[in-house]
Image 1 (spheres, rainbow, N blue to C red):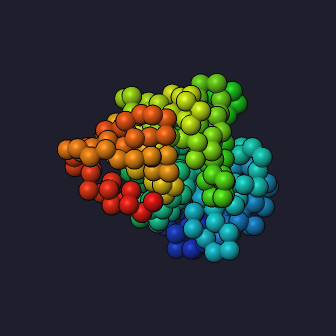
Image 2: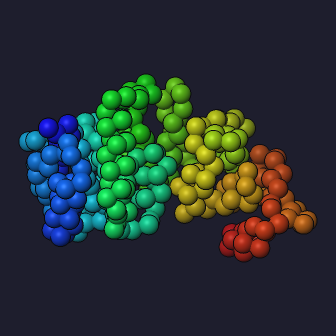
Image 3: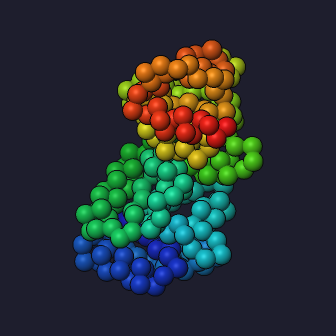
Length: 254
């Protein structure tokens, strides 16, 4: 008996067939009720069949998988992204703790993703009605605009902050403290590594195991064994010796 009703969205038929076969043979409890090769067809299927889960390809001709999600004010189904590309989109997916399968994926990876899907279904976690998918869609939208913003999940909901207003990020274990240009700061329940991945393409650089800085907010560099980056908020951020050469090379581009 199936407990998950799913559809597959992928522009390549052989990928649809391969996933269907894996699910049929190795993943009991999942019923594939339909498949689509594009966003328009997928939207019609979702609206008609109301699936619990959508396996969603990221890179497709004409419209990518995210265009499907943007058509919904509230995404009422779980999503497991499938992609062959290690790109910015994958960083954003990982940052918001959403499930993804990097092609080609194994049966074990597929089974693990389904287990997480079932666990989320049983224990829905909401932060003032805000889901990881809501945060993801907001970040995908705003980080691609000229005035980039990032949605930061907190215990009280979301804080929307222009990226250029972030001076630096400091690791505190599995949490990150973010310092802003107005001298305020915010603790976010994400490790620094995830901020590094998400913000690497928008002029942030990890100068130390504990520090990620906005190069646009750096005022000067103080020479030393590793040295220090003097930031616009007055902080002197230590640069590790092993990261110094890469840091200086990147800093010289500004």
